[in-house]
Length: 207
Image 1 (cartoon, helix red, strand yellow):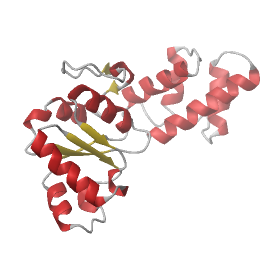
Image 2 (spheres, one colour):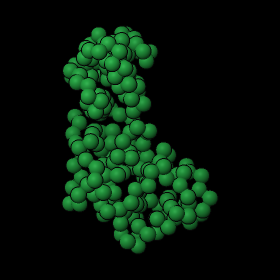
Image 3 (cartoon, helix red, strand yellow):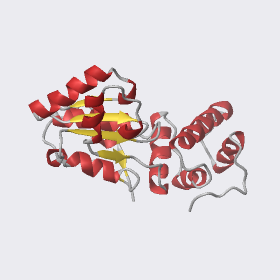
Image 4 (tube, one colour):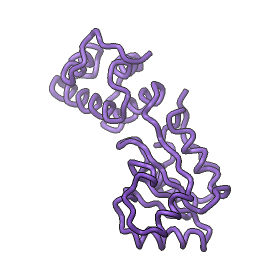
């Protein structure tokens, strides 16, 4: 069952933590960030698929803790990352580095940076489970001003691929279908939207 992120920090957040939906797919990452003061070093590498909410989670974390968040860290200047890692240890302010892959798979030329990153914990956001898919489809449709009945959300979520990209595709398709027909997203409209992304009535991926 999904719930909303509730990191037990006392600092005010610039991001609205209610925007980040928590399920088993990302709860390990959230709990790890909750307990940043127990990290063996003041740095962690966060990985997760594109569109998984890792950037939002990182921004929330930085705002809550007063630490620093670096997105797409594997593409950043190595000298700057090296100094950021050292500064985090000296200031005891956490550094969160987000990337597609764990640091062991980055192409790092600076030996001192590689050794420090390999000593840093790694935590991952996984592909979405069904409760998270339900929550994200509903949330993204709501952001676009589209009200959809729960049974319609469940219908489309059970038929699309289990990925954040798949969620984005069906939300785009539903939005376009509703705009073209100028009517609410009914079950019939949902079926048509699914057909536009190659999902037929016989497709049933998730329970």
